[in-house]
Image 1: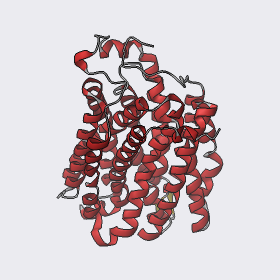
Image 2 (image 1 turned 90 degrees about the vertical axis):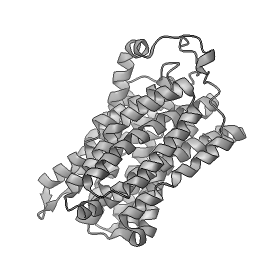
Image 3 (image 1 turned 90 degrees about the horizontal axis):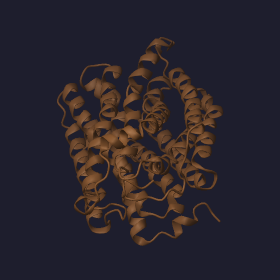
Image 4 (image 1 turned 135 degrees about the horizontal axis):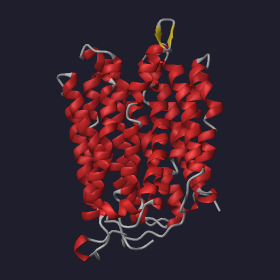
Length: 414
């Protein structure tokens, strides 16, 4: 049987739910990566350095656990669907406001608030989708959901390639307000999760504090794993456009074209490895994908020509996001019952918090490891990626998995 066969058996409601969760993460990522593409212009506009402007990326990532926890608790209390709609409206409004910034300080404040809203989307959207579909479809749907992230990067690449010369960096943020339109689709087409039970009719269960205490070891391990995962993705993505422009000397069109190409690889990789994990297991799929990054990394940074460099970028993102394609299913299956809105997203975003200084770290290392008097972004990215690929493989490979676990709203059930 094809690894994608379970997708064909989804009902129309299940397909709409998967589509909504995918689009939510796509549009959230699109809004995030807009800043990555215009970082150089923001620094120029506010008469500062790229390293100083990258603090906005750091604080966006650092604020995400707050949003994951707050929106996650709200989703466990009042339902996934309504909280997801509020979440999307919030990050869309903050994205638009970012384009109106009159100083770097104002932009940093807005991006921090945006980080809170961004942090809530993944956990709520993933729990809504995973609780709606049958267990045998989780692997394939996991890959599709996580492919929303590179899809958002791809959308930002296309907008940067096609519209940036016309609309400038502020216009990029204004375009980023469009995700608010998704709320209309959520209202009309998506029901509440079948596993969610309204608070008024729910049997009293253990408190959030006692749940976390009982699962403290699990939480620590998952946070460590997600820290490695976040260094893995952000270490290969956030500074790469800057590397292409400042170190390899490409203009915005070539940079955008390469980004489009490697994000296609990321989307395909996430879907393939997510679906494959349903057959071979979550841990094995993650280990294989992360270790295959190692032989691809040199080409990604040091390839002598544009075409080979793009091929290297395609391969690295295919395998990095291949490993990530397993994450939505893996974390939802690991989550304690009764807190699936809170646990996966919070663990994911706490890992993001620890890895939130990645862009500043890489720009700092690049400034230290100079090449011909210029920051060596390539060397900084390569060293980090090799270390982190091994860490992801080790943390996932020696961990646990609960594939095919039955979901329930009952916090007592295990």
